[in-house]
Image (cartoon, rainbow, N blue to C red; front, side, top):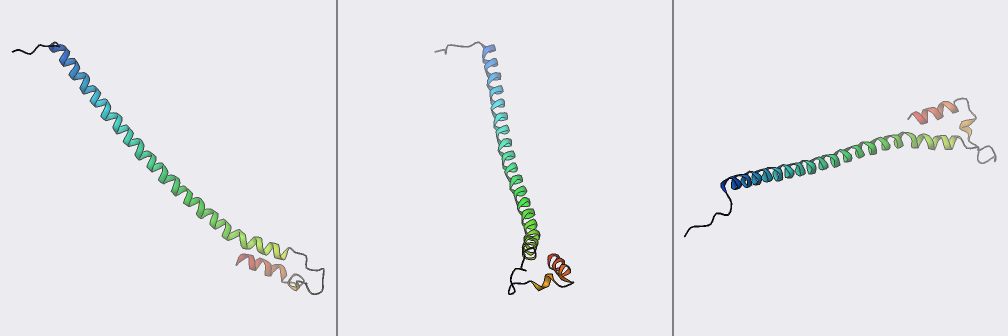
Length: 105
């Protein structure tokens, strides 16, 4: 009993080459997908690092300017309205120097 030949030999060779090309394209596409996944993970890592640097910078700025804002607010108030609430440090000669010293510390 002989098996019938559905395709000629040149068609079998062509289909074999087409299957090899499809297999190569599928593996290339998979490799590109995996590279994209790795790149996405690296971008996420870079964004986290950048966010931590931004947080550090904002913390430093707040550490410097919050006390300065407090001292400027306290020494900028007008306490000369009543006898019980006078700020004597503003009336002495070293008052501004004392304020600058507090701000520097």
